[in-house]
Length: 175
Image: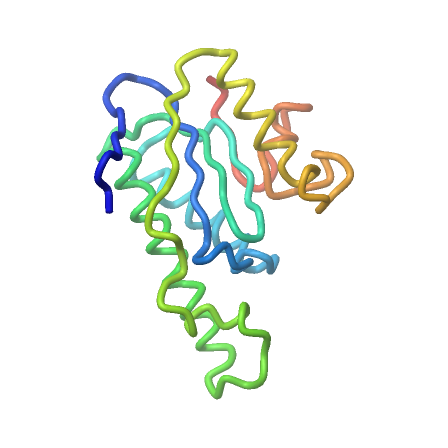
């Protein structure tokens, strides 16, 4: 399954990472799910010591722009982040709705065999122009998907840091 997949670590590049919920289902649609994701991202960031340069959370996928961590590599970071988010969201849903009352299937993520798609996309960002390109792409994603009219209207991204220096929901490392 991973045949032909090459990851380039140890070069000091930033990594533009994209990963999706299982079958691109909107498991991150709810505000609480996004809040939990941001909390776990902060925690994993402290533990693995990487710079978070940009991010955007979408209902069914995530984009991150990060440095290589001091501990492990981007694959390790993603494994821990995805594992913690899926476990906590599944537990939260189970605790909240133990009898599985009638809810839309997407809210009950534990009904699916997995929470995340197994693989992720990783692009080495090797120049300032590529960094800008990836940040612009991330920040415009909610507008392109017609979730909001302007990037500043989507609170689940690093846009406000680059627009006016505001940290928003999670602090951003200026590199």
